[in-house]
Image (cartoon, rainbow, N blue to C red; front, side, top):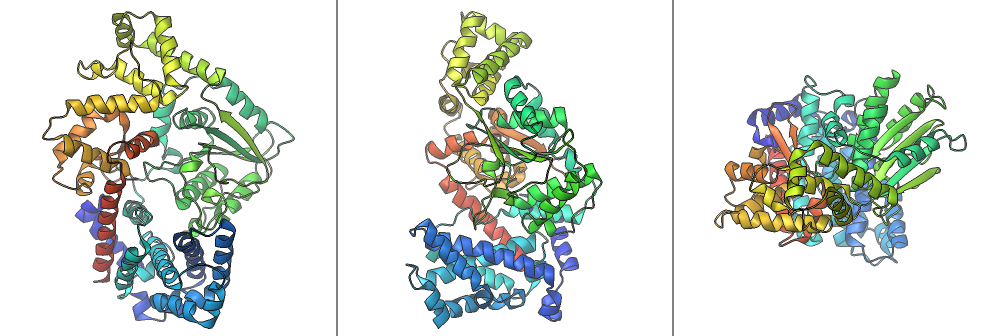
Length: 571
């Protein structure tokens, strides 16, 4: 984690002191907290109400949960006051729920008032902490002498509320956001933010001609003057590669969500897209902090950009992995995407198929990448043939196994079950010139499907681990899988239990390199690592001990660091 850098930690504390100080202690809270803070606080309260109702009333029908949340939001003023009253939050929440008005509100709902009070206190405190430490409008609260005590109270509610593991936004993201505010020098431009990912995913891009033609036809259709184009498909079928190809070939405004890299928040999406729109269309940047307040900033920027658009030159935004973006607690579209887009404005989004209604908009066209569709299998065939043409090592392995080219291609396509990620991984193993790693896959006996490939790879690799180190290697890899942010080796070790050291972590990097993304730090040249694809995380979740014990451990380390930062800031 970045907090392992003492210099950066000092810089963060200095930034908080310089920009927030002891404003609430030195002067009138109501003078310090103006309109922006009021809006930010209302946003935190509304989100917290949705989370609290979900936490304590999950057995109620959805309609009743929504009704309870609606009633609580109507009583927001009596329930929580305003930011100036925040330090009395726990007393205010409990007092209101115990009052005649609160009892009347809860009548008819099978909800325990005490647990609801605990849940509201937890989620409101958590929301304020995230906003404050991210340099948002509520930053002055983070320096108040009583804040860490209130956060400790929120921590205690975990006992009564059960497991909320992983729901607090990772301290990593908070630190990164603050670091970017401290020093903008050396930061990549928005257009360059995903350069490495785009280059990686487009390097061997193949096919998709029919889908691209259908997308182009929709963008040119007079009967479809604006709206959303949603491309769905199973994980690993190539949705991210498609978006990367469109970025590379068309230069569209873009954003890539990634659960494994911690890029899932509405703020990250809105700030990235607004910055690209501003640069492309010569628009003023949104005021600092406005991107945190839902879709208002994005809608305003889209309207300004659309004023310059034409039917033959529309505004197009690419949005990858919408399913991996955070869900709004009170319903609505993920990333608070607007229901209606201006004329000549389009969002092309990708997602795995989901059962929830995660995109409710006025104009939508769907395109599905089916794993058994002839055009998908044809694209995979073209990809395998292309790799055989360009890799003498691969062709040699196939010939040594006694297979003809046609027989190998046929087997690969059949065993892939239409999944591009399977083909990428298997061919990478077969092309590996390392004699030990080449034994991972037998060209004449391919695993069937991505899950079977992971299982085969996992079994062979574990057999190769020295018995005395096997537990350490597995612990290190599983901990990395639950970190939702690329981390340097030092931070990775800090978050890992037991006696895992840097040498073990580096060995895991060498042995599992194809399953890991490598990113360079923006602040130094130190490499950071994250799991390459969510399908591998899903496999580890179902295999052996799963990931829950490691999630709990990482979560507790993160909370301890966050509390320590708050206490250090206070002192």
